[in-house]
Length: 201
Image (cartoon, rainbow, N blue to C red):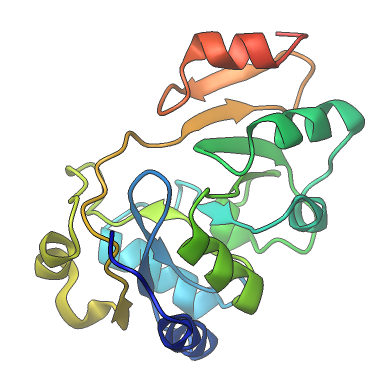
């Protein structure tokens, strides 16, 4: 695995502060990161991916406390958070008013994850909340290497962080807004593991 220095983390933080996009590794695939509070930067994410603005973007955070800053969390939700995160699970929760509508496509929910990847966590802990959407054109296959991703996006991305070949399945997505838990996408964590880990499912 390719190691990444703090110098690269600083470059990532600088790019994000300037409203630029980065490609960074997660515990599943490479993601495109932008400052979620910079509307122009978030617009760029939709544009480079050719993703409809009607489809929300997931957000990467680095701690349990971060989740509480962006979403409404009760004791049962926090138990799920502590059981599965950091890890390849995205939680759909009721968002707080501070979350920009462009990120959530105007919906009252936010999709949040804590990637189990040291580089991603360092970037988020040093900068703040960033988008966590796969580094591909919308509805096209996800490239596994930085070289492949560069061929897709070229100079539309300010910084590419190489962490070797990443070919995991996308994160599993579950909706915890209501008492009844909904599995929106089965990914790296299978349904059985989710059911075993969430008592009220």
